[in-house]
Length: 326
Length: 259
Image (cartoon, rainbow over all chains, first blue to last red; front, side, top):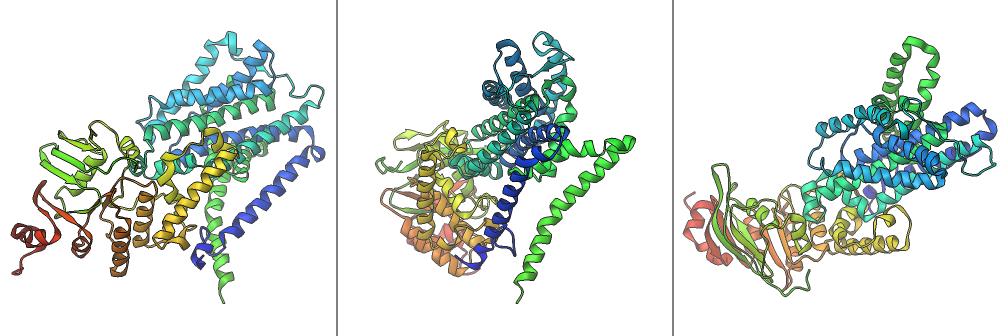
């Protein structure tokens, strides 16, 4: 292979070297997170459990951007579908998250496809605004179905996955495992026939049609995947926080998921998702004591992370070029 | 696709207009298998519009397009692709996020059978399908002299190479009709020479190959038959020698000796 191809993707630093570093970092962070509950207190494990669930939500938005070239500001609707599926199935049928989480994912996929079918011919800002309508309608829908959803008060999710095991640990590890599984599945998708077909459909829809990949199939597929992941995020959010209520499922939650996706540079790896999820979950906690300055400081933090994310690759290339000089 | 008996791709009375502007005027055409047919004409003559009608991107207001004895009327582009009618584009249409190899693998995407579950899980069928697609795509790239570029991204390659990558993608699914829209655009002399060699190699008795091209050296040297379009109508057709001698063609397109 030529020298150029060996240095593909990252300019001065060989691509394989960049991938190896990212993989080693992911393994180290995963190991640290696995060990975390034995070193940190209960409040941290609770917060990180919610963070993992939000990280899955961030991935759901990033999938839509990466594979569909579209933006959603109403993904909380699908998160809520997953969260309420878990809570309602527990209350009505007494089933644990082991059964209700797969049901939640199937429900999310079905709702995503049901939304994508009539909206398959719209895109860009029009699609974004139509997703926003879902988020705006959500609180009313929840409150009007209060006999099922518990209205404003919401529902508790109390059944454990493993009866007898420490509750706090279960609510930490299950979202972590779900996040790892989603990141792994998305890695598989990128390598699959369907994944590369979706990427071509996003960048050159007319060319994709010429190879039998229709726009309708691409839109339905991407929305189905994205909304299924969003519903899993909701299921994990309900389990990690032990509760579901409309107060946490507002338009703002959708916007924060989008912010998390932007902060993670729309990456679909475990590391990217953790960065996005941490920004959505942990930064507001750190800034909690700042009072009225919270929005300003949050904005500054957002700007800082995005700049760092964009400058990082340039800096890495510059270092690589300097290293390769004779 | 190629199991079908070799048949021509035919159009009868194709008329296309946008608003009041007539783009194609009731034209009749028959592209034969086993031949490389050139479609030439000045800019705006309607060459790409005819391609778009043949592939289903445009729906002509009148006329019938048939292939394999069946009308293609009403069939979308994707359904025509399933019948083996494949095209390349005037501007390079490769995905920048996919490697060259993955872009070429798209040519086999519609033939895959591994389901959605295998897209997310490391199931045996998925691994087999991917390896099969990779091997086929690598062979197609190697056949065009691009074997070393499989792992590169399109953004790292010159336009001429990208054209060849598009052709590799188009031929990978073993199409029965191959429509190439200006394949030599942006190529230098050496690259054009390579392209001519490649196109001759690709020609088989079963394949209908049509080339829209402005490079007259390429067209005259590789094509068995030429159609000349001007203002949406054919002004001549025949062998390259016949077309070269046609005074109307010389006047409107090739330029007279006085020019």
